[in-house]
Image 1 (spheres, rainbow, N blue to C red):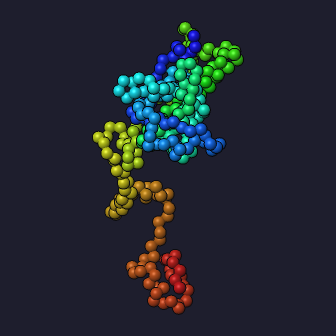
Image 2: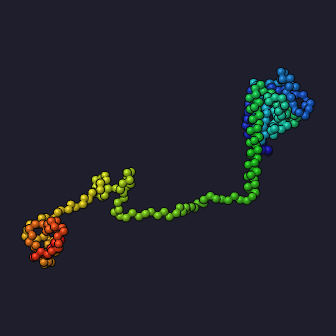
Image 3: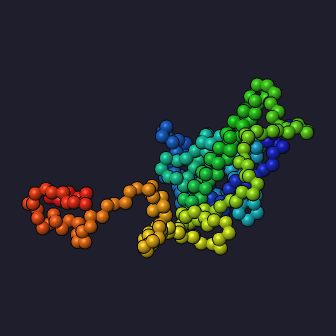
Length: 266
């Protein structure tokens, strides 16, 4: 039994109106011309339905009311001899119809709307594009089987996998250490025990110099005690005035030594 007999039939396209024309023999190698078909006198009008069974597409011409089959054209390749376009219009085609006995004939079909002819063309192109892709997939699968057994890369029962990310060392925080949070102002955190905020620095004032106390006569200071080395007391000159008075009064006087005094006068 052939594969096409086992396949189901799918509908690719349905058009409610199509016209059939008798066509004259081709007069030249340029192809068919729809202008030679007597377009105002179609031989038949009805419905067209395109179906696919396996790799073969079928163009079926059916009655609009009863659905009775008028003719069908099996298409094994497109573009090909089964469906040809005319050279002077995009709404007309030449198809090769066949009956069950093996006889065939060429007829012309035409659509009143260009959109219907476009859908007819696209439906056949998409089908045979799918056929080509299926053939390539089948060839690849057959080539892969002939090359050798496929590798089984799946996990077996109970099999696990271990991923080593690396040793990540954590810094040890000493016990009792206080972790300070950085503040947005950029200042150091307050010392422990403060209620918050930043403590302004304390200004250290220099000590004031206290003048030494004035000693009365007869009192000895600590400085006197330290420097009291039994030095001889100064000899009183006996003069009651300024010691330098003679120098100011007689600057040009001769040098003389007063009696009972150790000062030298000028």
